[in-house]
Image (cartoon, rainbow, N blue to C red; front, top):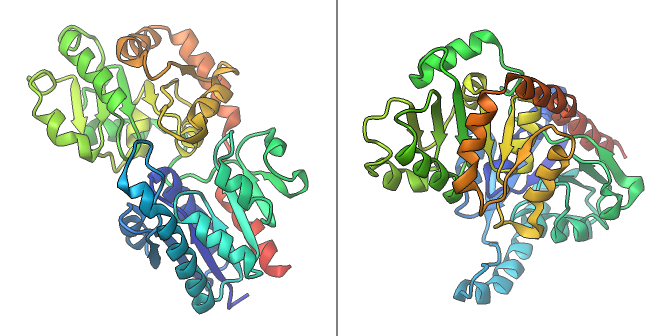
Amino acid sequence: MSEIRIIISGGGTGGHIFPALSIAQSLKKIVPEAKFLFVGAEGRMEMQRVPAAGFEIKGLPVAGLQRSLSIENLKLPFKVIRSVQMARRILREFKPDVAVGVGGYASAPLLWAASHMGIPTLIQEQNSFAGLTNRILGKRARKICVAYEGMERFFPADRILLTGNPVRSNIARPTEEQREEGYAHFGLEKGRKTILVTGGSLGSATLNRSVRQWAAQSADWSDCQVLWQCGKTYFAKLSSAEEVTGGRPNVHLLPFIDRMDLAFAVADVIISRAGAGTISELCIVGKPVIFVPSPNVTEDHQTHNARALSDRDAALMVSDDQAPERVMAMAEELLSDETRCAAMSAAILPLARPDAGEVIAREVLKLVKQ
């Protein structure tokens, strides 16, 4: 297998990039001499993150449909056509044995072109409610790796494999040593109950508003401390807000957390969006979680993702519109209920699939052999 060539497409957010890198790294462990090429969307974060991880990437001009009236929507058909043409050229030049799609703008034109050129394709569907693009691509895919049960309603049952979502290599059940390291790394008060708030790699306006409102009203007398990843685009505005940075030692505002393993380790309760990759990591971490699903996603898939856990009492869920008034109070209440915290941890841990990256990698290699 010395000449195996694998192309991986997708991106747009960390929720797509981290699984893609996990699959590539798992493949590299099994077949160190394999050749890889990533295909992403021009101007998106994968164009920096993938090279930083040591892999080559090419960009396509494809973009998503804007939800509001925009001149950009008129350009979209031309970008799609151009992207498919470029994808064909990339495939002819790289000559991959398999094309893997993890979701995101670039995944559609690349996998569509690959399937019509006779190249075996594998789709990694992260969500419990499959998007339209993957439902279409799934008709021609050789294998569809999914993270939730019941996906036969979207894909041919004989091609589905329940694998879970790949996660970052440093995500594991936190140790006490990591917890100690986390207190020092983030400058937190050791032993004080900690709420971690994260809206994902891009941040969340709703979660930021929730913490900001809580900080203005309650932070001075609260017994807990908050580690808050707000997103780089929101950081400048929030860090200059007087009610957030008014000397409160228990509110720790960061644009991005690069050591999320340590953040998970120090957290006693986590407030998070409900992206599929994030949920997969939180199942491994095993901490009590409150999900605030984003309403600004296709098919409302974050609500479906979160409900898959809340229905099993493995997490709590609060709607986006109710979060600013409720979510921080819910987190503080949960901090004071150790019995419930323990029950939630016990319910979420069995849902973890820490070997998903390796399982998917071996499925990719099966397609090469075929």
